[in-house]
Length: 448
Ligand code: ADP
Ligand code: MG
Image (tube, rainbow, N blue to C red):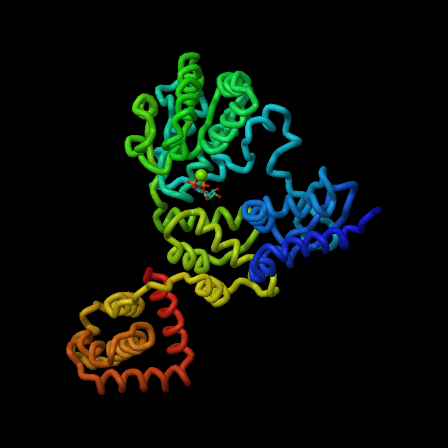
């Protein structure tokens, strides 16, 4: 039986469709096209690398199952990006890195996590510098173990992997092994069940650099902790480098034995914070560049201002925006960006304050802020004041009376008059429309 690439892809999609929401399906799978099927290798074309990364990151288990059903045991899915100029496609290197040689394959490292694409900011510069130092002389600095902690999505895994990638690339050592502590636990339990604990220990104790991500998952796992304790000692005593991450400071890891906790603090413990606005902008810019997407500065600023929690969310917002624009064949304009992100629930709990509007309006017209509250009727000042009142009504939930109070205790009929004046003016004056448009954006961006 031989299947055409499109028939195989259709069957594959049929299975995926039954298992995920229709919106996710439309967003992530619809835009993908099958290109060819060779043996059991199905090549598909994705709009950009975000797509393949996203679906690999979110649906890999599901996709593996579907692939198995459609194409059998050795089936493989590979991706290519349409290059826009016709039917030529550019293959994306597989993230499991199976062309990169043996040591790589066994390391569990993902090549794309590098120092080069790790954006430096005040939130991570110390951790980054220390990580570089560790990578340059593994096992030879006092940073052993090197422990990075911080909340989700702040770049811990990226940094840990970058250490391993750089050390291998520069040939500073031969054997690197990356695991998260759940993998370590599962493999250890398996080795007990299959009577292979000796082999298990040998693997982990014979590396030059051991990276264990998310050690908080060792909490309350006593036997695994004991095994890890011995692994740690063996490596440490022979001058090998140990790198760890945790979602909290090691001393707060209740449920991990004291003797391990004290060892975690023998070397260097450092943290990563959430990025500030400037760093978020730099990260978005970098992600856009990396993926060949041209986004204007105001869109980047808008996303960076509104997505503040962590870098994974930041990336996620960018992915969705790109997905939306490619599905709907729409260019990413500021308004498209705003709508897409709004539908994601962005900015739901934001409250805009009249004071913020006043600040931005006075900045825009280059006037002292208290002029908006003063009695003067000078033309430019009156205009700025009316604009500010108009925006206060349009963008806050404040009553006319409250707005009047914020503008030097004017009464509500003055506010109504201001709103009507601006409405009329914006119907006939381009300049007024431009002022309003610009200021609305500014206010929206400023209020998080
Ligand atoms: P954590 O392990 O702390 O939960 P990750 O390392 O998985 O976070 O980071 C989440 C995502 O954000 C990854 O795709 C990562 O590449 C990206 N990322 C995090 N920090 C940075 C940074 N400083 N520069 C560029 N990308 C980053
Ligand atoms: Mg992580």
